[in-house]
Length: 266
Image (tube, rainbow, N blue to C red; front, side, top):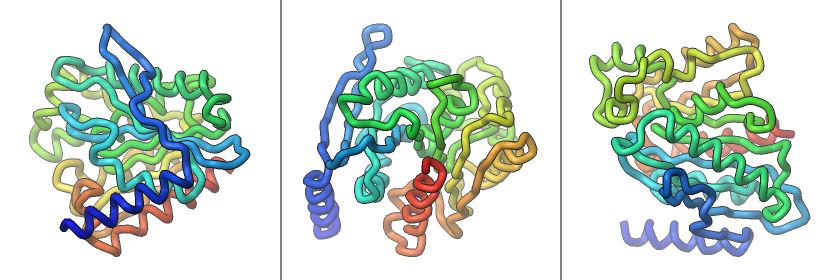
């Protein structure tokens, strides 16, 4: 385990030389709560395509450096700028506070695009677990220049009523986050329409927390509406990239993710 961790830290260090890594940049202060992000900017002329990354943690925990680090190396190697963000957590901050935080991060990247050498026409969103639920909702409701060019959604809840009925109850985190919010109102699938940005859904078939059917059901709704989407099925995978890192065959998602982003934001 120690050797594996050392190798991972070495890889991060190597990648840091290929990109300008800036940490703990404040991008918003809603209600006096400071929100920060880490930014990795490729060397070279640019402007570069960018990805805003939103972590999971059941809406109750986590930050910009938990759960999502496996996403950093493939994006850096492929020449993407990335911004991994913090957001306000439940139960102190309920829906839609986190949607507003993603919007603030998107506005920050747009406003500072020249400083970070970002192509404002090629900004994608990427989230996992709770973070995926947040970005899914944001992407299908965002308008104008605040709409992402593409969305990579890893094992998020797209329909809260379906998730509750399938599992028999809402999770502790979802209950704390949603409070008295109507489940249909909080579900990304409710707002799917023709101009919904392209989605790549990545989901394991053995996910005990967010049933796999969440992803293909939303993709089917998108296609019916005339929008574009794909589902990358990770056979046998459970919930969370941390577990996926231990199984070489699960790593196919990283290559597919990068290829899809390059093609979609070309």
